[in-house]
Image 1 (cartoon, rainbow, N blue to C red):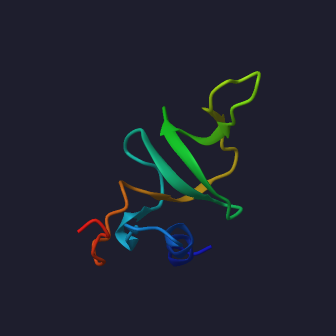
Image 2 (cartoon, helix red, strand yellow):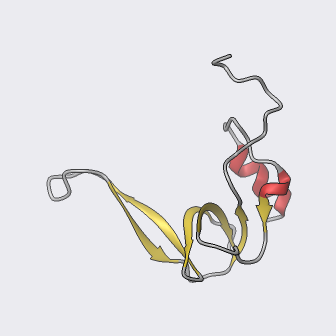
Amino acid sequence: MTKEEFLHEINAGRYPKYILSQIKEGKPEKDCSSIVCTSSNNIVLAKYENGKWHQAHFRTATFVYPSQSIYYTSIKEDVIYWTKGEAKDITRKQLSD
């Protein structure tokens, strides 16, 4: 997947949208949460912490787990692209204006 294809995929149905300069390669300089694209073209929510990427998973509420929770697992494959910061494209007027 190219950087432009990744951008298109994560922006589908989103406002505000990410812009191309927010799509990064390599490793972040500090811990962060991000949308990432792996070497097998999987797009997942992840956090970068202590030099490693961890995929976020959501556990739904059940009798055993009465509330929804998030847990993380290590991402075994390479992260190719990741988003930096919040989506910030302001080319469209917000609906609340």
